[in-house]
Length: 177
Image 1 (tube, helix red, strand yellow):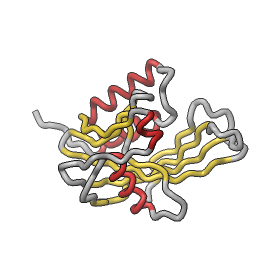
Image 2 (cartoon, one colour):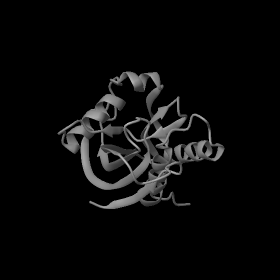
Image 3 (cartoon, helix red, strand yellow):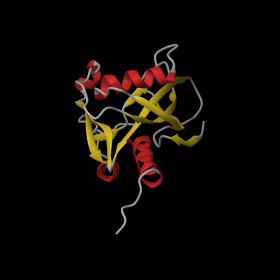
Image 4 (tube, helix red, strand yellow):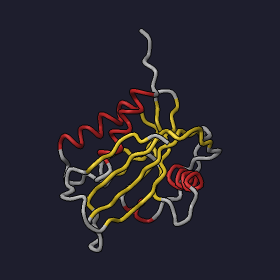
């Protein structure tokens, strides 16, 4: 397993204190120049499908569950572990000072047709929906949100945009002219 990056959120004041630990699995699903992402209206950003693992849940099982729920993906193939990011950021629960999240990214394949999604109530409330989008368009959009420092900006946009740019540079083949 390859460590891709360690990200410390710019608003985190200290790495000391009570830490909430979370493990997550996220899918990288590419099709030509398109990538399957989640657009969240509340935060006005694009992010990778996936999320936190349930207690005792195997990482691949959790990833498949998240992809099915959030995107309606079927016939999911986990092709390979791409790497992981260690992230430290402020946490909103008063009994913790910060969150330490390890996000594992996997290259995945899915059936062409997506089924209806089965979002959780907070995902629905946030206006989350799956979209196939040009990878560069998603990067440009997220970078603009960060540049404007939109008040609704979520804490994960830094990680998500970093990974989108990494995928664009490492996995997308330039079109010959």
